[in-house]
Image 1 (cartoon, rainbow, N blue to C red):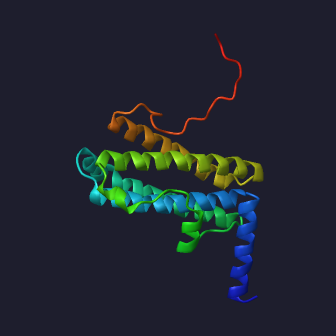
Image 2 (cartoon, rainbow, N blue to C red; image 1 turned 45 degrees about the horizontal axis):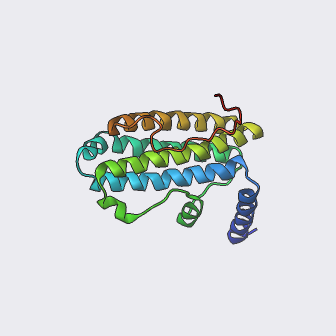
Image 3 (cartoon, rainbow, N blue to C red; image 1 turned 135 degrees about the vertical axis):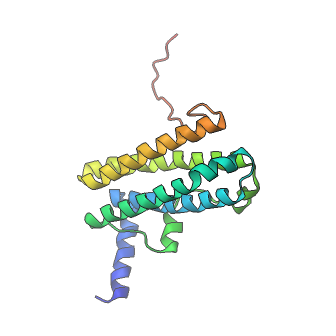
Amino acid sequence: MTATELYHAELERSDYEHHHPTAGAVIGHITSNLLLHTLKIEQAKLFAKGTAALFFAQKGNAWEDTEFAFIRKLNRELLAEGDLIPTTSKEVLEFGRLEEDGSRKYEDGNEQLFDLVKDFDTQLLYIGKGLALAKQEGHLGQVAALTDLANWMKGEIAFAQNFLGHDLKEGLYVEEDDDDDDED
């Protein structure tokens, strides 16, 4: 097969796997989200004002470095399992699920920080789905990497929420309890 034919086959496989989710497909969303998140962190580092500027001076580069390290680690784990890896900007934009808005750079620094915290929270939803599928598929390297990523993100959420003066879950996704067992 030619390079073009191989890539066309990859695109067909990717489309199938995104409609019939696999761990690899979900991890493709995760790595795309991480890449988009690093761009948002860079924007906040450059434009945030006030106390958030101090936060980004302390944590911004570490966040970016850690996220890039996880991208590399997850890509290696995808490759080890024969899973597909988003490698073009088109794929990253297609698979990324974080909201971008260039006007946010003009918002209050704490709002920019909280937006990034909410992005961590959104990413944890994908990581949970990826973990479940990786466990089901027996992809232990992916399970380990996703577990490490989730633990790191939870710690950074706690740190940033504390900096912002928020309770840990304030403004974040909270799963609704479906129990009909209301206590009086």
